[in-house]
Length: 224
Ligand SMILES: Nc1ncnc2c1ncn2[C@@H]1O[C@H](COP(=O)(O)OP(=O)(O)OP(=O)(O)O)[C@@H](O)[C@H]1O
Ligand SMILES: [Mg+2]
Image (cartoon, rainbow, N blue to C red; front, side, top):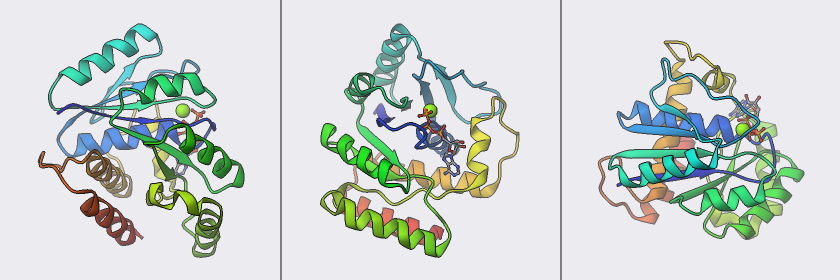
């Protein structure tokens, strides 16, 4: 039951790396095995120490092929592939073996324009609002911009991942032994949503698309 999610997109700084580690951490907290796959040659590998998942250095094409093949063949391992900004050809290669493609974007017209063109290039992908404002007015304005500019893609937009400061802890080279409950809860929720979008429940039972979308909307409403 190997499953792979990749987090890509042409715009830099949208939260790809943070979200990759959050999803892998969330899967680890669910008691499952996850590999967070680094593909960005301009970034460093992070230590495995104190993590609930395995960071894997796949900056070389050889290592990338190896890890994708291994994850695809080993039951009960889950792969989270972290892309890099401005690499359209690499993005296409990373999306190919993935069961789910996520395209994060922030609350800006520039990000929205880029994610819309990425949604066209990757017809199976979902757009994931990232670093979303938590202040009520800013959130309303961000949601309005998405509604007015991205209406056509409404059914492919996932509930937002909020902006919160402890998200950066997972990108430290060494992660603290104890992480804040907020971070753990958001990561678990995100991982659950990924399982739902894979069409696999946490216990391995298939779930329907209607259940998935209903649960996603409810989960985010409860978080806020
Ligand atoms: N949910 C969040 N809340 C607050 N800050 C965030 C969140 N997600 C990401 N950030 C911050 O935004 C910045 C960019 O995040 P990140 O490095 O994950 O983006 P990226 O898409 O991987 O960038 P690149 O394109 O350079 O690889 C970082 O400083 C990170 O700490
Ligand atoms: Mg990155």
